[in-house]
Length: 442
Image 1: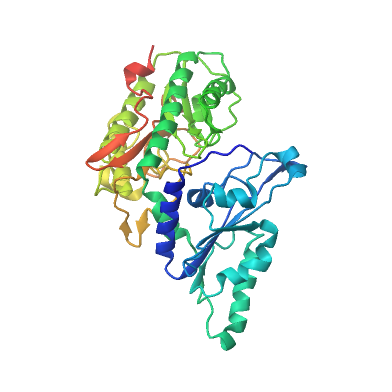
Image 2: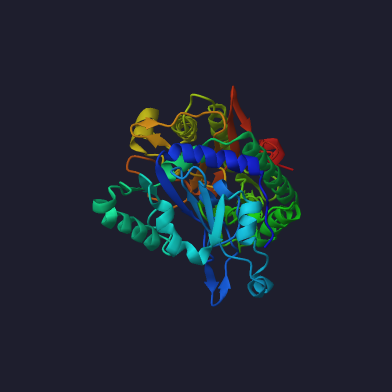
Protein backbone atom coordinates (compact mmCIF):
# COMPACT_ATOMS: atom_id res chain seq x y z
CA UNK A 1 0.00 0.00 0.00
CA UNK A 2 1.46 3.34 -0.99
CA UNK A 3 1.77 5.69 1.97
CA UNK A 4 1.78 9.47 2.09
CA UNK A 5 4.32 10.40 4.74
CA UNK A 6 3.63 13.48 6.86
CA UNK A 7 6.36 15.50 8.56
CA UNK A 8 7.21 13.40 11.65
CA UNK A 9 7.87 16.54 13.69
CA UNK A 10 4.37 17.87 12.98
CA UNK A 11 2.83 14.56 14.07
CA UNK A 12 4.97 14.50 17.20
CA UNK A 13 3.83 18.03 18.08
CA UNK A 14 0.18 17.02 17.68
CA UNK A 15 0.66 13.96 19.88
CA UNK A 16 2.44 15.97 22.57
CA UNK A 17 -0.42 18.48 22.67
CA UNK A 18 -3.03 15.72 22.76
CA UNK A 19 -1.20 13.96 25.60
CA UNK A 20 -1.07 17.26 27.50
CA UNK A 21 -4.81 17.77 27.08
CA UNK A 22 -5.58 14.23 28.19
CA UNK A 23 -4.15 14.94 31.63
CA UNK A 24 -4.15 11.61 33.46
CA UNK A 25 -6.50 9.78 31.06
CA UNK A 26 -5.33 7.23 28.51
CA UNK A 27 -6.79 7.39 24.98
CA UNK A 28 -7.57 4.52 22.63
CA UNK A 29 -7.94 5.72 19.02
CA UNK A 30 -8.69 3.01 16.41
CA UNK A 31 -7.99 3.26 12.70
CA UNK A 32 -10.76 2.71 10.18
CA UNK A 33 -11.57 -0.86 9.12
CA UNK A 34 -12.02 -2.05 5.57
CA UNK A 35 -15.69 -1.82 4.52
CA UNK A 36 -17.34 -4.35 2.24
CA UNK A 37 -18.76 -2.93 -0.97
CA UNK A 38 -20.26 -6.18 -2.28
CA UNK A 39 -19.45 -9.88 -1.96
CA UNK A 40 -15.70 -10.00 -1.18
CA UNK A 41 -14.92 -6.59 -2.72
CA UNK A 42 -14.12 -3.70 -0.39
CA UNK A 43 -14.55 0.02 -0.81
CA UNK A 44 -11.35 1.97 -1.35
CA UNK A 45 -9.80 2.43 2.09
CA UNK A 46 -10.27 5.78 3.82
CA UNK A 47 -8.47 6.29 7.11
CA UNK A 48 -10.24 7.56 10.21
CA UNK A 49 -9.42 11.27 10.36
CA UNK A 50 -8.72 11.40 14.09
CA UNK A 51 -6.34 8.44 13.85
CA UNK A 52 -4.65 9.94 10.78
CA UNK A 53 -4.25 13.36 12.42
CA UNK A 54 -2.23 11.86 15.27
CA UNK A 55 -0.35 9.05 13.53
CA UNK A 56 -0.12 9.62 9.75
CA UNK A 57 -0.50 5.82 9.46
CA UNK A 58 -2.65 4.85 6.49
CA UNK A 59 -3.44 1.18 7.05
CA UNK A 60 -6.72 -0.37 8.23
CA UNK A 61 -7.37 -2.07 11.53
CA UNK A 62 -4.60 -0.46 13.57
CA UNK A 63 -5.11 0.92 17.09
CA UNK A 64 -3.18 3.77 18.71
CA UNK A 65 -2.77 4.21 22.47
CA UNK A 66 -1.87 7.53 24.06
CA UNK A 67 -0.63 7.02 27.60
CA UNK A 68 0.32 10.17 29.53
CA UNK A 69 0.63 8.05 32.69
CA UNK A 70 3.49 6.15 31.01
CA UNK A 71 5.90 8.98 30.10
CA UNK A 72 8.62 6.60 28.87
CA UNK A 73 6.31 5.05 26.24
CA UNK A 74 3.33 7.36 25.73
CA UNK A 75 2.59 6.40 22.09
CA UNK A 76 1.92 2.74 21.29
CA UNK A 77 0.68 1.32 17.98
CA UNK A 78 -0.92 -2.04 17.29
CA UNK A 79 -0.64 -2.82 13.56
CA UNK A 80 -0.89 -5.68 11.12
CA UNK A 81 2.56 -7.30 10.88
CA UNK A 82 4.52 -7.77 7.67
CA UNK A 83 3.17 -10.80 5.79
CA UNK A 84 4.38 -11.53 2.25
CA UNK A 85 1.43 -13.83 1.51
CA UNK A 86 -1.04 -11.08 2.42
CA UNK A 87 0.98 -8.29 0.82
CA UNK A 88 1.03 -10.04 -2.56
CA UNK A 89 -2.76 -9.63 -2.60
CA UNK A 90 -3.31 -6.30 -0.87
CA UNK A 91 -0.01 -4.43 -0.99
CA UNK A 92 2.78 -3.33 1.28
CA UNK A 93 2.47 -3.10 5.05
CA UNK A 94 4.80 -1.15 7.32
CA UNK A 95 4.49 -3.71 10.07
CA UNK A 96 5.66 -3.46 13.67
CA UNK A 97 9.16 -2.28 12.75
CA UNK A 98 7.86 0.43 10.41
CA UNK A 99 5.44 1.66 13.06
CA UNK A 100 8.40 2.52 15.26
CA UNK A 101 10.98 3.54 12.66
CA UNK A 102 8.78 5.53 10.25
CA UNK A 103 5.81 6.61 12.36
CA UNK A 104 7.41 7.42 15.69
CA UNK A 105 5.69 4.88 17.92
CA UNK A 106 7.51 4.35 21.21
CA UNK A 107 6.41 0.72 21.11
CA UNK A 108 4.51 -1.34 18.54
CA UNK A 109 2.86 -4.77 18.59
CA UNK A 110 0.93 -6.99 16.19
CA UNK A 111 -2.75 -6.12 16.14
CA UNK A 112 -3.58 -9.65 17.27
CA UNK A 113 -2.00 -8.90 20.67
CA UNK A 114 -4.30 -5.98 21.52
CA UNK A 115 -6.68 -8.07 23.64
CA UNK A 116 -3.94 -9.44 25.89
CA UNK A 117 -1.91 -6.23 26.21
CA UNK A 118 -4.55 -3.50 26.40
CA UNK A 119 -5.41 -3.90 30.08
CA UNK A 120 -1.77 -3.61 31.09
CA UNK A 121 -1.27 -0.42 29.11
CA UNK A 122 -4.41 1.19 30.55
CA UNK A 123 -3.57 0.21 34.13
CA UNK A 124 -2.77 3.29 36.17
CA UNK A 125 -4.67 5.75 33.99
CA UNK A 126 -7.08 8.10 35.75
CA UNK A 127 -9.65 7.66 32.98
CA UNK A 128 -10.10 6.11 29.55
CA UNK A 129 -10.80 8.28 26.50
CA UNK A 130 -12.56 6.21 23.85
CA UNK A 131 -15.37 6.99 21.38
CA UNK A 132 -18.09 4.43 22.09
CA UNK A 133 -20.52 3.28 19.40
CA UNK A 134 -18.11 3.61 16.48
CA UNK A 135 -15.59 0.77 16.74
CA UNK A 136 -17.38 -2.55 17.33
CA UNK A 137 -14.22 -4.67 17.22
CA UNK A 138 -12.27 -2.58 19.70
CA UNK A 139 -15.02 -1.40 22.05
CA UNK A 140 -15.51 -4.76 23.84
CA UNK A 141 -11.77 -4.94 24.52
CA UNK A 142 -11.76 -1.45 26.06
CA UNK A 143 -14.78 -2.25 28.23
CA UNK A 144 -13.27 -5.55 29.34
CA UNK A 145 -10.00 -3.85 30.27
CA UNK A 146 -11.86 -1.20 32.25
CA UNK A 147 -14.03 -3.85 33.88
CA UNK A 148 -10.94 -5.73 35.09
CA UNK A 149 -9.64 -2.53 36.65
CA UNK A 150 -12.95 -1.97 38.44
CA UNK A 151 -12.96 -5.56 39.68
CA UNK A 152 -9.46 -5.17 41.11
CA UNK A 153 -10.04 -1.71 42.57
CA UNK A 154 -10.95 -2.88 46.10
CA UNK A 155 -7.57 -4.66 46.29
CA UNK A 156 -5.36 -2.44 44.14
CA UNK A 157 -6.79 0.85 45.35
CA UNK A 158 -7.03 2.39 41.86
CA UNK A 159 -8.97 2.17 38.62
CA UNK A 160 -9.87 4.48 35.77
CA UNK A 161 -12.57 6.75 37.14
CA UNK A 162 -14.60 6.91 33.96
CA UNK A 163 -14.94 6.39 30.23
CA UNK A 164 -15.02 9.66 28.30
CA UNK A 165 -14.91 10.67 24.67
CA UNK A 166 -11.62 12.01 23.28
CA UNK A 167 -13.51 13.95 20.64
CA UNK A 168 -13.89 17.33 22.39
CA UNK A 169 -10.14 17.53 23.00
CA UNK A 170 -9.04 16.22 19.63
CA UNK A 171 -11.63 18.04 17.56
CA UNK A 172 -10.80 21.34 19.20
CA UNK A 173 -7.21 20.77 18.05
CA UNK A 174 -8.31 19.89 14.51
CA UNK A 175 -10.53 22.97 14.26
CA UNK A 176 -7.49 25.25 14.35
CA UNK A 177 -5.28 24.50 11.34
CA UNK A 178 -1.52 24.76 11.54
CA UNK A 179 0.34 26.59 8.74
CA UNK A 180 1.24 23.23 7.17
CA UNK A 181 -2.43 22.27 7.06
CA UNK A 182 -3.41 25.57 5.48
CA UNK A 183 -0.87 24.91 2.72
CA UNK A 184 -2.49 21.55 2.01
CA UNK A 185 -5.94 23.14 1.95
CA UNK A 186 -4.65 25.74 -0.50
CA UNK A 187 -3.43 22.90 -2.72
CA UNK A 188 -6.79 21.12 -2.55
CA UNK A 189 -8.48 24.43 -3.36
CA UNK A 190 -6.17 25.03 -6.32
CA UNK A 191 -6.87 21.66 -7.92
CA UNK A 192 -10.60 21.93 -7.23
CA UNK A 193 -10.80 25.44 -8.70
CA UNK A 194 -8.94 24.37 -11.83
CA UNK A 195 -11.41 21.53 -12.32
CA UNK A 196 -14.36 23.91 -12.10
CA UNK A 197 -12.80 26.22 -14.68
CA UNK A 198 -12.19 23.27 -17.02
CA UNK A 199 -15.75 22.07 -16.62
CA UNK A 200 -17.28 25.44 -17.41
CA UNK A 201 -15.28 25.64 -20.63
CA UNK A 202 -16.52 22.29 -21.95
CA UNK A 203 -20.19 22.53 -20.95
CA UNK A 204 -22.72 22.80 -23.77
CA UNK A 205 -26.29 21.65 -24.39
CA UNK A 206 -26.53 17.96 -25.15
CA UNK A 207 -23.70 16.79 -22.93
CA UNK A 208 -24.62 14.56 -20.01
CA UNK A 209 -24.07 15.50 -16.40
CA UNK A 210 -21.85 12.41 -16.17
CA UNK A 211 -19.54 13.69 -18.92
CA UNK A 212 -18.98 16.90 -16.97
CA UNK A 213 -18.33 14.88 -13.82
CA UNK A 214 -15.71 12.91 -15.73
CA UNK A 215 -13.86 16.09 -16.75
CA UNK A 216 -13.75 17.27 -13.15
CA UNK A 217 -12.66 14.01 -11.58
CA UNK A 218 -10.10 13.29 -14.30
CA UNK A 219 -8.39 16.55 -13.39
CA UNK A 220 -8.38 15.60 -9.72
CA UNK A 221 -6.58 12.35 -10.52
CA UNK A 222 -4.18 13.91 -13.01
CA UNK A 223 -3.11 16.41 -10.36
CA UNK A 224 -2.28 13.66 -7.88
CA UNK A 225 -5.34 13.83 -5.65
CA UNK A 226 -6.93 10.65 -4.30
CA UNK A 227 -10.09 11.63 -6.13
CA UNK A 228 -13.29 13.47 -5.23
CA UNK A 229 -13.73 14.47 -1.61
CA UNK A 230 -17.44 13.53 -1.78
CA UNK A 231 -19.95 12.47 -4.39
CA UNK A 232 -19.66 15.15 -7.08
CA UNK A 233 -22.92 17.00 -7.71
CA UNK A 234 -23.45 17.90 -11.37
CA UNK A 235 -27.04 19.06 -11.54
CA UNK A 236 -28.70 20.61 -14.55
CA UNK A 237 -31.94 22.55 -14.37
CA UNK A 238 -34.39 21.43 -11.69
CA UNK A 239 -31.95 18.76 -10.48
CA UNK A 240 -30.07 21.61 -8.80
CA UNK A 241 -33.00 22.01 -6.41
CA UNK A 242 -32.10 18.60 -4.91
CA UNK A 243 -29.34 19.55 -2.48
CA UNK A 244 -27.48 16.23 -2.51
CA UNK A 245 -28.23 15.20 -6.08
CA UNK A 246 -25.61 12.69 -7.24
CA UNK A 247 -27.38 10.67 -9.96
CA UNK A 248 -25.62 12.84 -12.57
CA UNK A 249 -27.35 10.97 -15.41
CA UNK A 250 -29.44 13.64 -17.14
CA UNK A 251 -28.75 15.54 -20.37
CA UNK A 252 -27.88 19.22 -20.16
CA UNK A 253 -30.65 21.33 -21.69
CA UNK A 254 -30.39 24.58 -23.57
CA UNK A 255 -31.71 27.37 -21.35
CA UNK A 256 -31.06 25.62 -18.02
CA UNK A 257 -28.48 26.40 -15.38
CA UNK A 258 -25.85 23.87 -14.29
CA UNK A 259 -24.87 23.61 -10.62
CA UNK A 260 -21.55 21.86 -9.91
CA UNK A 261 -20.58 21.08 -6.32
CA UNK A 262 -17.24 19.25 -6.40
CA UNK A 263 -13.88 19.23 -4.68
CA UNK A 264 -10.86 16.97 -4.50
CA UNK A 265 -9.31 15.08 -1.61
CA UNK A 266 -5.51 15.07 -1.46
CA UNK A 267 -3.32 12.08 -0.68
CA UNK A 268 -3.22 13.24 2.96
CA UNK A 269 -7.00 13.72 3.03
CA UNK A 270 -7.25 17.53 3.04
CA UNK A 271 -10.24 18.60 0.96
CA UNK A 272 -11.60 21.23 -1.35
CA UNK A 273 -15.33 22.02 -1.58
CA UNK A 274 -16.51 24.43 -4.29
CA UNK A 275 -19.88 25.12 -5.87
CA UNK A 276 -20.46 27.16 -9.01
CA UNK A 277 -23.62 27.68 -11.04
CA UNK A 278 -23.77 28.98 -14.60
CA UNK A 279 -25.95 28.90 -17.76
CA UNK A 280 -25.44 25.84 -19.94
CA UNK A 281 -25.76 27.86 -23.16
CA UNK A 282 -23.64 30.71 -21.86
CA UNK A 283 -26.42 33.26 -21.32
CA UNK A 284 -28.62 33.88 -18.28
CA UNK A 285 -32.35 34.41 -18.69
CA UNK A 286 -33.78 37.40 -16.87
CA UNK A 287 -35.02 35.31 -13.94
CA UNK A 288 -31.80 33.32 -13.74
CA UNK A 289 -29.70 36.47 -13.71
CA UNK A 290 -31.82 38.10 -11.02
CA UNK A 291 -31.50 35.13 -8.70
CA UNK A 292 -27.82 34.60 -9.50
CA UNK A 293 -26.98 38.22 -8.75
CA UNK A 294 -28.85 37.91 -5.46
CA UNK A 295 -27.04 34.73 -4.38
CA UNK A 296 -23.70 36.25 -5.43
CA UNK A 297 -24.39 39.40 -3.38
CA UNK A 298 -25.30 37.26 -0.37
CA UNK A 299 -22.22 35.09 -0.79
CA UNK A 300 -19.84 38.04 -1.15
CA UNK A 301 -21.34 39.74 1.90
CA UNK A 302 -21.03 36.52 3.90
CA UNK A 303 -17.40 36.01 2.84
CA UNK A 304 -16.66 39.59 3.87
CA UNK A 305 -18.13 38.80 7.31
CA UNK A 306 -15.49 36.14 7.99
CA UNK A 307 -12.76 37.30 10.35
CA UNK A 308 -11.35 36.99 13.86
CA UNK A 309 -13.96 37.70 16.52
CA UNK A 310 -16.88 36.94 14.20
CA UNK A 311 -18.93 33.73 14.29
CA UNK A 312 -20.21 31.17 11.79
CA UNK A 313 -23.71 32.07 12.93
CA UNK A 314 -23.02 35.68 12.06
CA UNK A 315 -21.82 34.67 8.60
CA UNK A 316 -25.07 32.75 8.09
CA UNK A 317 -27.18 35.64 9.36
CA UNK A 318 -25.45 38.00 6.92
CA UNK A 319 -26.28 35.76 3.97
CA UNK A 320 -29.89 35.27 5.07
CA UNK A 321 -30.40 39.00 5.49
CA UNK A 322 -29.24 39.76 1.94
CA UNK A 323 -31.27 36.90 0.45
CA UNK A 324 -34.50 37.87 2.20
CA UNK A 325 -34.19 41.51 1.20
CA UNK A 326 -33.61 40.51 -2.41
CA UNK A 327 -36.47 38.01 -2.45
CA UNK A 328 -38.78 40.71 -1.11
CA UNK A 329 -37.75 43.00 -3.97
CA UNK A 330 -38.36 40.23 -6.51
CA UNK A 331 -41.79 39.43 -5.07
CA UNK A 332 -40.88 35.89 -4.09
CA UNK A 333 -41.47 36.85 -0.45
CA UNK A 334 -43.75 39.39 1.15
CA UNK A 335 -43.95 40.97 4.56
CA UNK A 336 -41.44 42.48 6.95
CA UNK A 337 -37.79 41.41 6.67
CA UNK A 338 -37.05 40.67 10.32
CA UNK A 339 -40.33 38.87 10.84
CA UNK A 340 -39.69 36.62 7.83
CA UNK A 341 -36.24 35.75 9.16
CA UNK A 342 -37.51 35.11 12.70
CA UNK A 343 -40.34 32.87 11.45
CA UNK A 344 -38.15 31.08 8.90
CA UNK A 345 -40.67 31.94 6.18
CA UNK A 346 -37.87 31.94 3.58
CA UNK A 347 -36.87 28.32 4.13
CA UNK A 348 -38.85 26.92 1.21
CA UNK A 349 -36.33 28.81 -0.95
CA UNK A 350 -33.19 28.55 1.21
CA UNK A 351 -33.24 25.62 3.60
CA UNK A 352 -29.64 24.97 4.64
CA UNK A 353 -26.92 26.67 6.64
CA UNK A 354 -24.42 28.93 4.93
CA UNK A 355 -21.36 26.80 5.61
CA UNK A 356 -19.43 24.24 7.61
CA UNK A 357 -15.92 23.66 8.87
CA UNK A 358 -13.47 22.21 6.33
CA UNK A 359 -10.30 20.18 6.82
CA UNK A 360 -9.53 16.46 6.91
CA UNK A 361 -13.28 15.90 6.68
CA UNK A 362 -15.39 17.85 4.21
CA UNK A 363 -17.89 18.55 6.98
CA UNK A 364 -15.04 18.89 9.43
CA UNK A 365 -15.10 18.45 13.18
CA UNK A 366 -15.38 21.25 15.69
CA UNK A 367 -18.20 22.79 17.67
CA UNK A 368 -20.29 25.66 16.32
CA UNK A 369 -21.67 26.53 19.75
CA UNK A 370 -20.42 26.14 23.30
CA UNK A 371 -23.61 26.08 25.32
CA UNK A 372 -25.47 29.29 24.65
CA UNK A 373 -22.52 30.97 22.95
CA UNK A 374 -21.49 30.59 19.30
CA UNK A 375 -17.85 29.67 18.71
CA UNK A 376 -15.78 32.76 17.89
CA UNK A 377 -13.75 32.58 14.68
CA UNK A 378 -9.98 32.48 15.15
CA UNK A 379 -7.03 32.48 12.74
CA UNK A 380 -6.49 28.98 11.36
CA UNK A 381 -10.17 28.03 11.23
CA UNK A 382 -11.46 27.20 7.74
CA UNK A 383 -15.10 27.20 6.71
CA UNK A 384 -17.16 27.10 3.56
CA UNK A 385 -19.47 29.96 2.64
CA UNK A 386 -22.28 28.67 0.43
CA UNK A 387 -25.65 30.42 0.30
CA UNK A 388 -28.12 29.37 -2.36
CA UNK A 389 -31.68 29.58 -3.67
CA UNK A 390 -33.75 26.62 -4.84
CA UNK A 391 -37.09 27.39 -6.43
CA UNK A 392 -39.37 24.37 -6.82
CA UNK A 393 -42.61 22.76 -5.65
CA UNK A 394 -40.84 20.32 -3.33
CA UNK A 395 -41.54 22.34 -0.19
CA UNK A 396 -44.86 24.00 0.57
CA UNK A 397 -44.98 27.77 0.46
CA UNK A 398 -45.47 29.02 4.05
CA UNK A 399 -48.82 30.53 4.90
CA UNK A 400 -48.90 34.20 4.03
CA UNK A 401 -46.14 33.97 1.43
CA UNK A 402 -46.86 34.37 -2.31
CA UNK A 403 -47.34 31.44 -4.64
CA UNK A 404 -44.34 30.94 -6.90
CA UNK A 405 -44.83 31.94 -10.53
CA UNK A 406 -43.88 29.22 -13.03
CA UNK A 407 -41.17 31.38 -14.57
CA UNK A 408 -39.03 30.99 -11.45
CA UNK A 409 -39.44 27.27 -10.95
CA UNK A 410 -36.59 24.88 -11.65
CA UNK A 411 -33.89 27.43 -10.89
CA UNK A 412 -31.34 26.17 -8.37
CA UNK A 413 -28.26 28.25 -7.55
CA UNK A 414 -25.49 27.82 -5.01
CA UNK A 415 -22.11 29.60 -4.83
CA UNK A 416 -19.52 28.17 -2.44
CA UNK A 417 -15.97 29.13 -1.49
CA UNK A 418 -13.50 27.80 1.07
CA UNK A 419 -12.44 30.61 3.40
CA UNK A 420 -9.64 30.60 5.99
CA UNK A 421 -9.75 32.97 8.93
CA UNK A 422 -6.53 34.99 8.96
CA UNK A 423 -4.91 37.29 11.50
CA UNK A 424 -6.56 40.42 10.13
CA UNK A 425 -9.52 39.06 8.15
CA UNK A 426 -9.80 36.10 5.82
CA UNK A 427 -8.29 34.37 2.80
CA UNK A 428 -10.54 33.01 0.06
CA UNK A 429 -8.74 29.79 -0.83
CA UNK A 430 -10.93 29.13 -3.88
CA UNK A 431 -10.95 32.58 -5.50
CA UNK A 432 -9.40 31.10 -8.66
CA UNK A 433 -12.79 29.55 -9.45
CA UNK A 434 -14.50 32.54 -11.04
CA UNK A 435 -18.03 33.53 -10.09
CA UNK A 436 -18.86 36.99 -11.49
CA UNK A 437 -21.86 37.29 -13.80
CA UNK A 438 -19.55 38.21 -16.68
CA UNK A 439 -17.34 35.16 -16.08
CA UNK A 440 -20.34 32.84 -16.01
CA UNK A 441 -21.49 33.99 -19.45
CA UNK A 442 -19.81 33.53 -22.81
